[in-house]
Structures are given as structure tokens and as C-alpha cells.
Image 1 (cartoon, rainbow, N blue to C red):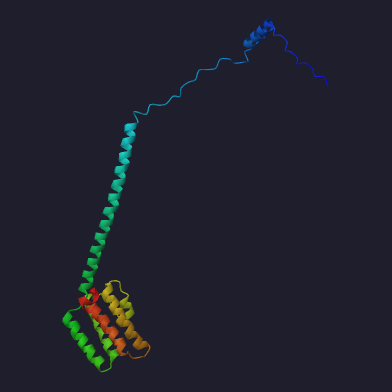
Image 2 (spheres, one colour):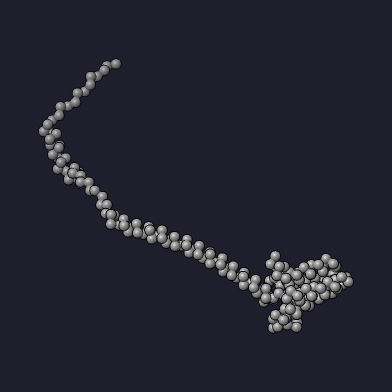
Length: 204
């Protein structure tokens, strides 16, 4: 195998190189000069900083006022609720019969119950309660009303209405089921009337 000697580069022709350089420089399609680098135009925010600070504190103040509004609204609602409950209790109190009359009625009913006439004792409480309601509101009860109709009247406050309904249901059961009330039934009617007639009953 014969190894050829390395080929030596041809000598550089100075005139030819200079001519080639002049042609390269004269070519307008080639850009040699780059435009200077321009610094970005950053706006001056120093004048806006005070405005941003004012806006921030306005937002903080608005949020604080909103929290105060919620607290005041909650307190006002609670106060109104207390006043409303107080008004309801005062109205219910006005429907309560005189303690002396209520005790006399219970004495008469107990006398019937002592004879085993529990249904009659319960009807006595019911009819006397209807008389009391009619005395409080003469325009409220109509002749066609049943005891359940009376118990459904929204004009009667909840405490006396609940007690009246408990007694009315017992009396209706004894009438329509044709089954006399027992001692336990009478005890329930008596307890319901006591809760209606005496302040310590419905307040407890």
C-alpha cells in the first residue's frame, strides 16, 4: 500500500483575496452594521405610588365598615327578636284567666273526676275555656266552629292554643270513639289547663 504525501494548500493570491473582499463589502444584500440596542422605555411609576396607597387604605376602610355593618345588623336582629318574644309573652299573658276563677273551675272538675266522671270533667274544662276565649274576643268564635276550628285560630297565642287543643282532642276522642276517658286522660287534660291558666305553667 502506497501512502500519498499530504497535499499542500495552494498559496493565497493577495490580489484575488482583496478583490473578493471588495465584492463582499459592495454586496448590499449583506448587512454588516447592526442597529444600536435601545433601552426599554419603562414608565415612571413614582407618581402613581401615592394613588395606589390611597386606594389600598380605602379598600381596608370599606372592609372594616362592612364588618361593623354585619355586627350591628346581627345585634339589631337579636334585639328585635327579644322584643318580639316579649310582645308574644305579654299577649299570651292577657289571655290567662284569673287565678281564683281557674282554681274554682279545677275544683269543680276535680269533683266530677273524683266520681269517675273523667269525660264530664274534661268537657267542663273545654266549655269553660271556650267561654274564656269568647270573653276575650267576642268576634272570634262562630257558631259553626268545632273545637278543632277554635284551636286552629291564629289570633289565639300559642300557649293557650296548645293547651286548648290538648283538651279538645281528648274530649273529641271520648265523644266520637264513644269511649269514656280514663284517669290518665283526665290527668293530661288537667295538666294542659294548668299550663294555660297559671303563669308558672307556661313559663316553665
